[in-house]
Length: 620
Ligand SMILES: Cc1cc2nc3c(=O)[nH]c(=O)nc-3n(C[C@H](O)[C@H](O)[C@H](O)COP(=O)(O)OP(=O)(O)OC[C@H]3O[C@@H](n4cnc5c(N)ncnc54)[C@H](O)[C@@H]3O)c2cc1C
Image (cartoon, rainbow, N blue to C red; front, side, top):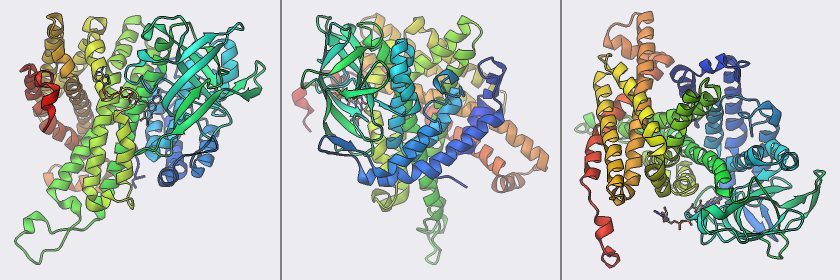
């Protein structure tokens, strides 16, 4: 039965049948794990998501967060689940045992986070940001900082945040105005205002540790002059005991469209000139250091895109199987025809398959990204390691932006499946859409992610990362073309992949010839095409695996006719799953991949109207 959050059968398919993560067990790093161990962890994660976190979804949204007398309160229903979450060691199961983790593969960690986020993403942001802050100190902190802050953060005793944005410095972080003044004891006085800080202040933990970007007085303007500081809400003495309240205060919390259970705070540092911060890492290395957390957060936001969409889909599917409305189209001339469940209507089926195929593709993309981290850890050679790291580097902006753009569309379609009820608070469809929207904006808007992809990532290592990815896709369609049942869709992938590579070369050429505005103007379109090709690749790769498994089931059951095969697809859950996987892939190839070439050509046609039109002519 569906848990109405995430299809765990599909999670297992991607991890064990498609990616084959068991190969990790051959390495020193993962030799103590077995498939059964990982399945047990995934099962526990599902129970926690369904029984403990999901019940807070609606209540947390309705109660929201409040600021009264300088204290920010979170939804009351979050307290026990947060405690259970931390006590269960769910903040850092992917980290090594020396920092309290279990060292599980990142791919499995992502599958757990998908479940938790689908249950309530606003709740999950508290431990998610805490992990990011702890990990920064783990990588860049001194031994003393690790002892003082990191251990308590990884345990969830204290919480963490990520403080970049200021009222005048959003997308352009380099223009920040927060300052750091050197003190004789080596610490710094921090002064400035950060806005939109997720989990910026709250009552879930007795202390909050803020990694804050600021400029040391006298350091140069722009990103090169930025340093990063650990600023605790309550100062921490060298022996680890909690000291006095630091001069950092919540100036207000936002009233938002979604993720209402997460407190988005304006934080004033040093209003009384007494905010103490400790330098993290080297001076002026703040952006490089924060990038570790930003990359983690970008993948986390990609997960938000996926998990919220997944829950929206599971609910829409269940509703479509229950809601009775209208006679079927083939009975339209029969006034006595009985109404059927809406899943019988072609348009609803098509919406559902669009959602299903995208979710499966996005899930593969996310888990593959995590698998890249695992593979880079176990790689035996530098070349091998660089290949896996290169995939991840290249794909990070795509994971963030493509997944959240498509996730939002999935939530919207989910609402359409419900009809009018989807727009009402009686059903969760509208909350999924509200909670999902922010994912296209924060952690660097999707527009900024696209510029990062086109302006920075494509050219990394002289294009080697792109070529490695293209080779992966080429290997896939070459293999699939030998299967008569999948040859046609494999050709669609080939055509789409070639068109994407040609467009990539076209952009490189345009850059060289000084016409860089065309790639900049079309960066979002390019990122979408990239996403379509890469998830098309994963879907078809999955279809190849599913095809072989389905044939084996038919053989074992003696199903040789179409009727018998269809019968098995209805009665055997594995046959249903594999045939559904093949249907998703074929649908995606026919509906989306076939359009890639034309969309690439449209970009190459070179329209620059948005740049040519004068501001005054934008009226309509
Ligand atoms: C609910 C919520 C939670 C958040 N959590 C955090 C957090 O925890 N920590 C934190 O530091 N920040 C956080 N943020 C801030 C968030 O990351 C920023 O809102 C985001 O980066 C965009 O910045 P901005 O709002 O200033 O928009 P702007 O930078 O003003 O951008 C406005 C529009 O202009 C576009 N734009 C701007 N510059 C360019 C450019 N050079 N080229 C092309 N397009 C451009 C943008 O893409 C966008 O469409 C949060 C925001 C919200 C709403």
